[in-house]
Image (cartoon, rainbow, N blue to C red; front, side):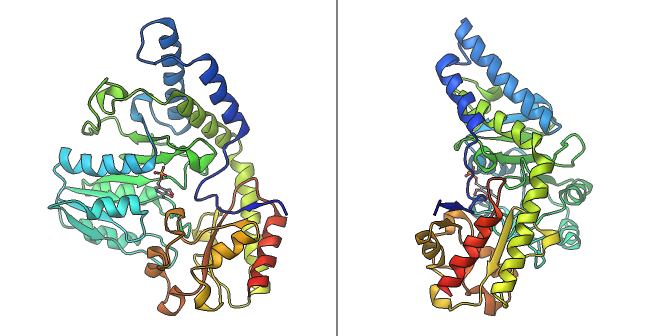
Length: 373
Ligand code: PLP
């Protein structure tokens, strides 16, 4: 059987078009964008064209886009940079953020940390955010757009408006949303947005952050003055151009892919419910991303730590929680927050889809789960 990849929230396959653009660049446009000779100027043109095209796709201006090595770097930079630059005294976040956010926030000194409540879908309760923001101190709010484990979709427009009505800065981790939703950042009340190319069929180790024009950030790296003097270091041009190509293709296919993937998720839920009467779907269909399906199975708890491995032995890749937590025997911090206690230790998997998946993939997954049962 051909290996079946149902772990697209961990990472995605690089599109062939992206590989070919990157290869061409490495062969034919390998100059240093900071060099003043023609090879350098050609590289600089490719760099700035990518920035312009990415900005255009998400309704931003070129000078609001900064390239980074991915989301983790951008998250650290923004949180720590804001605390320093804006004398932030409090960070409001949720207990179900990615560890890149949670661990950075928990590592801050002399900053009050407040956790906003989330509902059973992992969606932020807006009234609770309003209540927290009532206390008027310099605040940064860090709340993700789409949760990476259960797919809960936050209302980032309302969150941003609430933040701005209370003079708080708003950063959103849009890693699981970029390339799946259309963004118009000119209209969105967001100060910082974070994205990572390998989640939308681009290369790994590259991402970008959006920083609204009038907002300042601290310098991350001193050196050659790249990225407007904020993040020095020779730019990873092939990866940047690859990322731009991947995002362009994602946008071109956005409606078609969304429709197809929604059908895949619905089919998976239907099949799982037929074959596992007591399956627990973690997150309602209407409040979660169609790319992510998180289920707990009514199987013996002793196989919780083994289920992903058992499926892998059958040629099927899924994960348990996020990729970085997959090997852990501890229950996921996200499920701990949203599930009743008697379900937290049940065997659980995250199935995450993309346009490459087929209905047969789902049939094979269900068949494999039944064999394990
Ligand atoms: N935030 C979310 C929601 C994620 O899913 C991930 C990756 O799994 C990250 C942040 C970290 O991204 P990166 O691998 O680009 O550092």
